[in-house]
Length: 231
Image (tube, rainbow, N blue to C red; front, side, top):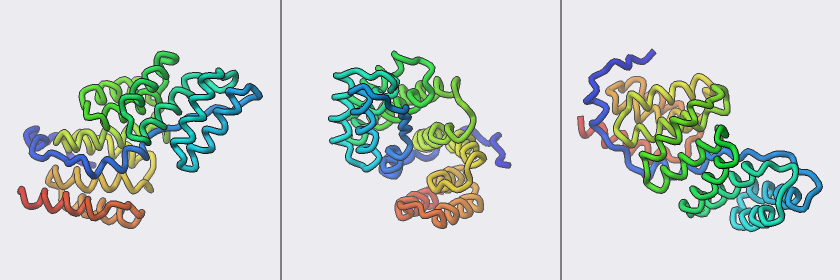
């Protein structure tokens, strides 16, 4: 197991560029959707779910907003707000995404996915402080199972960007314990290990990310090269 009692200054040596995690953040969003009943709003929410799953985010947003106008019966209101927030996120409107994820949490302050999604939205908007606050609250409701993956990956990515690889490794290894077939986890671990001066572990994680089909290996390699040149 990794030795976390390293020199704290090592954590501050590298700052992670935003480019690499931009493509991943969208994948980290949780879309929690309830079963739909016969009400008009529920029917629209179900249609919005289908459109979202097809990647038709603009049409999904319009449909979810119509569901909001009509009201939902069996479809939970907080989940509808979460869906709307995720659509805005996919359309790069982070302010509106934050607005709706906040509304989601006003409906249900203990909604784990809502806190994770709000954190991702704040992170994408460049507000790392509020993102971290959301992630910390989410940890209070952490189910510590596969649903936790996006939280641990988000925390790992954020700590890498903050130049704190030891903290990043802590959460990314938690994600690995839950699922050992997620390419994103190993891509981030390869960078975090390199930042923490663990080249052998970095190489192993890099190879695993490649074998699992991580799509941005060139960007990972560029970052690893920058880290190597700084040492």
